[in-house]
Length: 119
Image 1 (cartoon, one colour):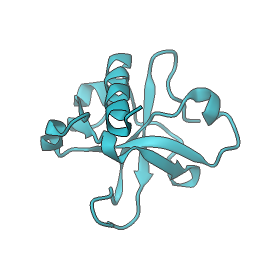
Image 2 (cartoon, one colour):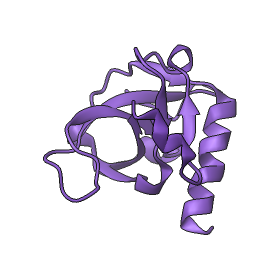
Image 3 (tube, rainbow, N blue to C red):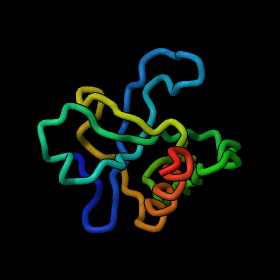
């Protein structure tokens, strides 16, 4: 079962974003679950995620956060692309996390999401 995290951690999962449409994420790629745990335990069919990319040049965009490989369980450093936060149907999520992101990075990502959404 996926979770926002055990105490102060959040899971990274693989998401199938389908075929490329404009600048939206495409192909199977890791994503960071940012939805609160209490919502994850409901019957809501979607989960809020932030796509991750190994294109570290995207760190330069406002709000994006560099996630070192050793902090995520991934093979390469990644960038959380906060401007692409959004819902993904649970059916497209792999239910076995591939890593966890420390709380300090989750906090930075939250700041980035609020910057992008203006909330």
